[in-house]
Length: 307
Image (cartoon, rainbow, N blue to C red):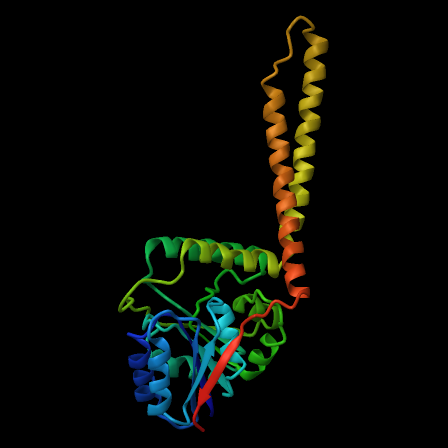
C-alpha cells in the first residue's frame, strides 16, 4: 500500500528535519512518499529541505513555492504531487505526533472511508486559536452542512479518489475541508493526541484567521447572500413598524412633537444593513473577478526529488 504525507512548511527550519526523521523511523521507507511544500519561508527552511532530499532519496518530493500563499494553497500544491493510495496531511510543528500516522492510515483503510479526521480530547493551541476554531466549527456546521459531531482538523487522511476530486477545484481561494465536504460524506474520525508546539508560535495571525473564515464563508456557500436578503426584509419590516407607530402617535396625541432622535438612529441602522449587504455582494463579485482573471492558487518555483 503506497502512502503519501503532505506537509506544508513555513519558517520551520528547526522542526522539519526532525519531523521527517521521526516519520521515516515510524513508517519505514517502503512505499512511502513525503511531500514537503515550502510556503515562501523567510528562514532556512529551503536549505534544510534540500538536505532532506539528499538524505532520503526516492522518498522526498520537495516543492518550493515562489512566495507565501497560505496553508491551504500550499496543501493544494502538495496534493498535486502526492502519488500514494492514501494521503495524510499534517502540520510541520510536531503538534500532530508522527506515531499517529500509521493508525490514521489503517483506520481509513479498514473502515473504507474516503476521509478520516482526527479529533482531540485536549487541543494545545493558544486559547485565542481554540476560540477561533470553535467559531469556525459552528459556522462550518451551518454554511457547509457539516455533521455536528465532526471536527475539521488539519491532521487527516484522504484516499487518492478524494484527492483527485479536490484537485478539480482551480480557484484561487481553496478551503480543503469545504472541498472535502463538497465531494463526500463517507467520513470517519479517529481519536488522537495533540502535542504542545515545540518551538516558535503559530503562523496564523488574526488577519490569516479572518481570511480563512472568509474562504469558507463566501467561497463554498451562498448562505451569506440569503442571510443578507433576510436582513433586508427584517430591516424593511422594522421600518414599516416604526412608520406605523409614528402615524398612530400623531393621530392619538397630535400635541406631542415627533422626536428627531429616532430619525438618525433609523438612518444609521438601515444604512449599516445596506452596507453589509453591499460588502457581501462586493466580496462575491471580487472573488469571481479574481477567479476569472486566473489568479493562481500557487506558483511553484521548483520541484526537487531524486527518484
